[in-house]
Image (cartoon, rainbow, N blue to C red; front, side):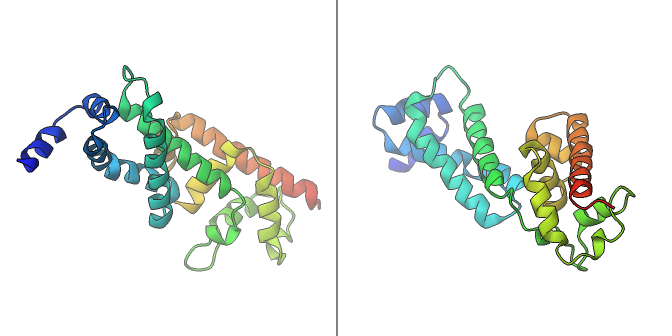
Length: 198
């Protein structure tokens, strides 16, 4: 009998489950969590690229949903609302990771894709790549970039997302993402050139 009730409840809409939960039915919230756990985890994982961090952020998302469910306007779409919470939680996490060690951009063969991207063009000093403290220099320069620029660099170089994938994650046009990437690289070059002139 109890299984039949649970099966019926699983067919309820999000709105109905929220209404039932707010009337005191705890199982309705459990069904909502089960319904969105995998999609939210998958969405968050695209930001972090790390299962442990994705689990932590997903847990944070559901705690925020639980705390704010009474404020949720039921004429709105619950799925849109929960994914917005997930996106904001992921971006908050990335902001904390902004001061990232540049070793995180290293490839398996010991190269560094971001360093190689920056060092190749002529505006950088010739000796820049040979300096032992290049990682510190780049980290210091990265901290001065806007968060939107950092976000594109981290997703592209650390997590290996294509510009199209980044555009989907950030809900931006691919042209916007490419422009941010180009400007971020130019800004990093300028910061390094100003600090270490020829």
